[in-house]
Length: 204
Image (tube, rainbow, N blue to C red; front, side, top):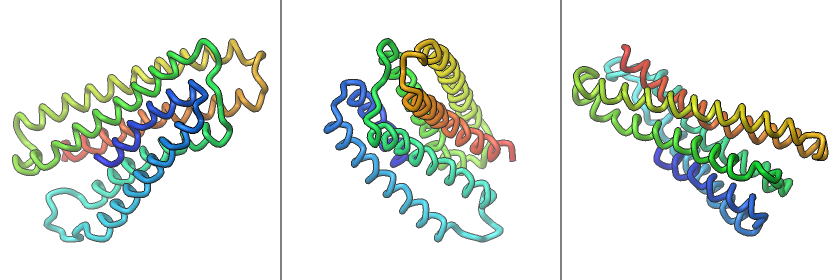
């Protein structure tokens, strides 16, 4: 998850470069994101291969694999956003720049919050998933839910404002802009899903 966060955090730098039409810088950021996404893939494969199959694991193996898969998808989708925008040199419509940056930054913050929750997993194991540590993690997950709700609100507003500008944009550009908006929202959704998987572990 640390590698996933490092990859996703670069999305803010990428969007800033794209808004400035600095495609050289955007390309450099994308290359770094690609490296981190590959690192995350390699770690995922290694974890899958070495995760014990013992019946005496402190939690269900399939639950951990599902959580791992959701984490990996965050990095994948972050890179997808950058790749799509870079490939088409997509510009953000005038007047939407500040809100797009807020949207990206809030989605990145949701990823960071999921990371905070995941980082508590070792402490949860030590206390046997009971006590104050559980309350602490559940509070982190509630904060994550709030962040995801906020990204939903920003996404709805951006979609509305983009709709108002649609007639002034080439149709194909508008289609791809909506796609980018969808994927940015998905980064926050996937981060919330990681928190949800952890919450399931707490419930068991």
